[in-house]
Length: 65
Image (cartoon, rainbow, N blue to C red):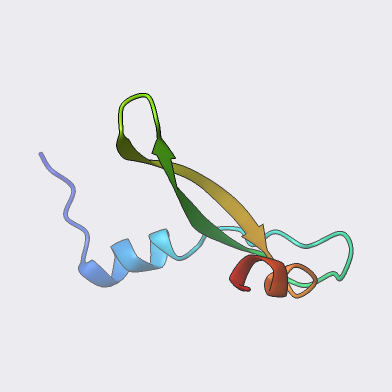
């Protein structure tokens, strides 16, 4: 038998993630996907490097520019 959960219950479960605290400024951090495009001379094509960054008040200007 399948579980039946409402859409509101699924959203409440997904939004219940813990928020991390910055050790420098004690504000909440957001996780942001940072995508950097890199041109490869060997293959002559563009590649994308993806990584997650934690953004808070103290490094917000560096990340967003």
